[in-house]
Length: 132
Image (cartoon, rainbow, N blue to C red):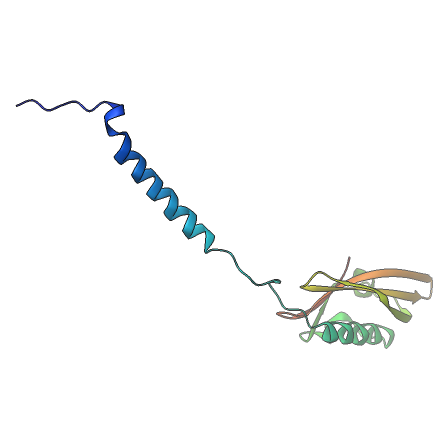
């Protein structure tokens, strides 16, 4: 008994159906992987504003970033190095949001001068304040 030898042209239709089926499965499985959520971490803008006010006032009062932990995590190197903040003003007109963080501009006055900085403030999963 002899068996026919299949040439590439002879296996075309069933082969293409299998490839199409595999491609359809991949496309539909990938399509379901997206998320409709707009921001990975929700932002509470009022909490962000209040946290910056609280942190800046703590700095004026002579506290350190460690004094606010674990409620607020702060990463300001000037404060951590002991720089003395005399006063501050939050510039609400210049704040922006990226959905997960509030970008808050603050005018800081020190003994040696003043500077304007943008703090990036997150409220979820914890309150974080870091200069940009």
